[in-house]
Amino acid sequence: MSYRRTRAVFIKELHHITRDARSLGLALAVPLLMLVLFGFALSLDVDRIPTYIYDQDRTVASRELVRQFQGSRFFEITGYPSGYREIERAIDRNQILIGIVIPLDYGKRVESGHAAPVQILIDGSDSNTASIALSYAESLVRNYSLSIVKDTQNRVLVYSLKTGEQKGRVFGAYAAVSQSAKLLCVENETGKLAVYDFETIEKRDEFTFSRPISMLRFSQDGRRLFVLTVAQTVYILDVSSIAKK
Image: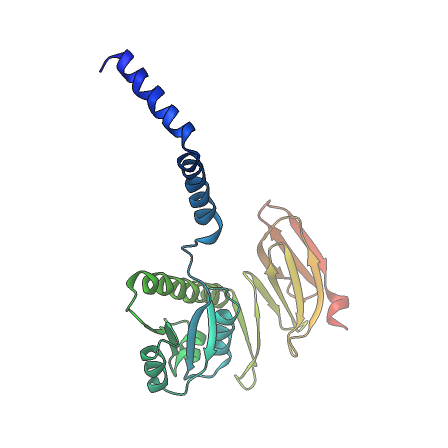
């Protein structure tokens, strides 16, 4: 097609649009309307998913998992059934999209450091929405499990030497114990050293270092604590006054 013909067609169409105000208005309004709809009115996010949680375990660990779902903007907890029948009935009646079942041994498995599976029942009638809701639930459970694993790995359990019973627990990456001074020292945060009474697990004092700690060790008499940081700096702390408190 030659330039003259192309130019003639362009001028003809331009005159046609300018003479017809309705066509000009539609040509300008429709793209703007679509831009507003897709920008503000339409959303592909799935949130406030109607959810049932069936907690068979009813332990501290299971209740914490329930609180994770309650605090998420993606889930709206609408009920706490006492059996599978209620979950199935609610799904059949389109009252919920997803049901979470926490098994009986969940808390025990979490405390022992073993895998603690959670059952997820979902309405698959809308496959796209169901897959998004399933990914949200799996991500929440996985992140909570990872946080538990991290805490478990950094957990320090304190047992009585006489009875063998567990007296308490604290969390930290490095720990040192002095039987003579009856003190327990733990780095419970990066660069922060907490000193506990070994008998009562009551915090006595706290020290802060500019770099993370790499080693802790008491002297033989328990009066001094040697702290080595990752910068290869050694600190010697006199903890005799703390032991006497």
